[in-house]
Length: 209
Image (cartoon, rainbow, N blue to C red; front, side, top):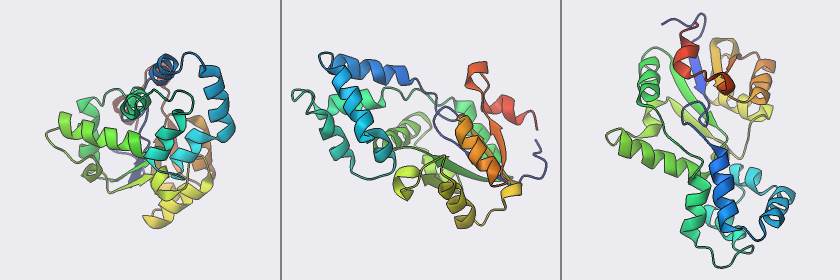
């Protein structure tokens, strides 16, 4: 497998490595806050609560406690489970592919994520992949909540390029969000938009190169 001119590969996480279904989280919150879900949704949007959590502005406990004002009877564990319900599976062939690529390329992870989701994913990988440490399959992991930076802003891409000492033209960025892809292109990074609507996956993508 040869990626022409590419020495580095940066993977997105959600929708690229781990399968997602955000509707499951919407439904879970609907079940917990059925009487005032519209009020909750409006307030969350107004406070920009989800994006701020991805930027690491506050702890997981603060994030979860916020929702209790809409239903004081809901338990913290119920909220955590509801928030994580969008996270599905990581097919074994995806982990195997990344491990294979890491022998030849510098492989990185760049994700807009939060502490609750990433902790869940780390535990999932340990449980399903013989105690594998998810972080170790990458040369380095870059997470929005740790960096206080977030895609699609140029600053997070510039940070990764500078921190890892990468040449943009020698770097392939794979993401399922077109807005993120467009920003990377502006910096000269090679890109591929993983089109989930066409059921495209990493294996199919890399076979094109």
